[in-house]
Length: 332
Image 1 (cartoon, one colour):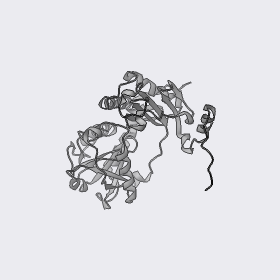
Image 2 (cartoon, rainbow, N blue to C red):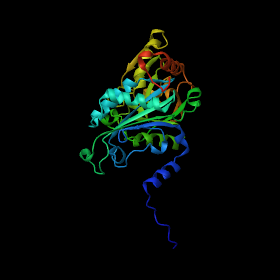
Image 3 (tube, one colour):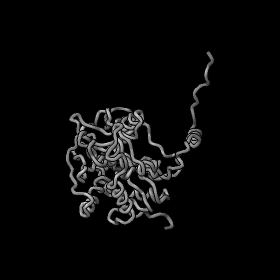
Image 4 (cartoon, rainbow, N blue to C red):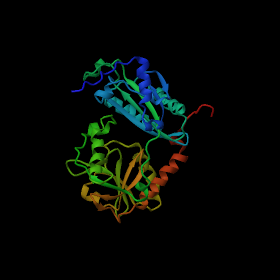
């Protein structure tokens, strides 16, 4: 048996060179990162790292949120920060800074990234300190922010629609569903299962046959009598985007395009009879579902309410001054 070369022990300088040499091609879309461990912002993707002993890494003891950066403005930042703080409280993660300071760091990291469009994701973790289970060993909670350009969903999602399946992945208990934590294994498995079955995404259903949510998106329905329906938020994540869309949809009620908006339980049987199904979230915005478990929804084509709400989202990002926070770019 041929003896393999010994595993090298690297110096600090060698390790940093290795880090820079192993940056993958997609890292070109990573523009800036703030780390409370470093106490500042870096723009070199090789330095956008988190300590392995951070409890968020090895125990999943962390929460996160995401805001949209559009035209140099952060959309619904304050609502996302408020939800991050609520999640941290539920996860028993003390804030390393007051909420206003967290907000300031997010805005300044976006400015350092220099991009006017993209995504801003930020995490609060129990912090580094060891590899045990309890967070008492942590030296202090940590805050991380990354400015990046996410991979865009295919244009066909909006022009042709999305295919979904009823997921067999066990649904999260209500408490853990309402905390936006880094424990996203069930969410990942929903997508993997859907792809295995030739679909684009999956829908969580509870043990009573009631519809919950999709992988990382809320699910809404338009009935044949023009009622916009959505499951209650007591057992699922209260999406910032769906809450805004439910507000904007009131205009469609005023115009007669919808008859009513109703937040109440929806069974799988009721959902299958809908005229339209919508996936709603900060990444996907509003996208129509045209097929569920290989059966068409409505006439099997994207419907008018999905199109109208997507248009309203884009208009909101451009004009809703009460939803926008300007980024102070250097030299602007």
